[in-house]
Length: 199
Image 1 (cartoon, rainbow, N blue to C red):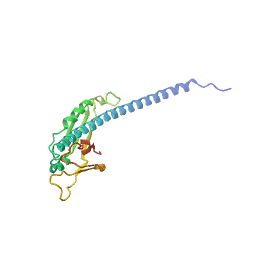
Image 2 (tube, rainbow, N blue to C red):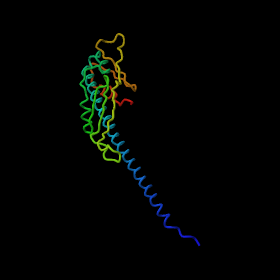
Image 3 (cartoon, rainbow, N blue to C red):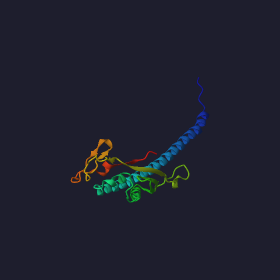
Image 4 (cartoon, rainbow, N blue to C red):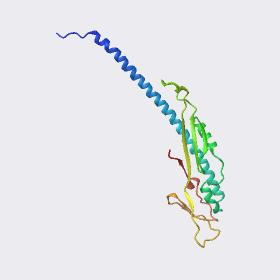
C-alpha cells in the first residue's frame, strides 16, 4: 500500500515558490529600469545627432551660397571650400531642432567645418525600482562635420585670363564652368558632404 504524501511537503514548497516568483518579478522590474534608462539615452543621442547635423547643414548652405556669390572670382573658392569664408555661427539651428525633439543643447563650432553638440533630454528616466531615476535626465554628445566634395583644377597653360577653373568632385563628377553660361551650377549637396564624426 502506497503511503500518502504528507501535507507538510506542500507547505514547505510554498515559501520557496513565493521567493522564486518574487525574485523573478524583481529581476523583471530591474530590466524595465535598464530599458527605460537606455530609451532615454537613445532619445538624447538622437537629439544630439539631429542638432549637430542641422547646424552643419545650415553652414553648408551658407558656404554654398558664398560660392555662388563669388563664382566669378575663382581666387576666393579655395577659402570657401576650406571653411575660411566668413559665415554666421549656425548653433541657433541646433537649438531650434533640439527643442522640437524635447531636449536642450549646448553647441559650439568644432574647427572651421564642424559643430559639437551636447544634448540633454527634457524628460527624466521616470520612476523605477532604482532610487534617483525619477529626476535623472540623459545627456549625449555628437559632432557633425562638413567636407568639401570638390576642388578647383588649375587652368591650363595659355588659358584665357577670364576662364573659370573646372571643379573636380568626389565620385568622378566634374563641372566645367563658363562665365557666359552659369545656368547649371552645383548644388550645396554637390559641393559639400555633411556627416556625423566617428565617435
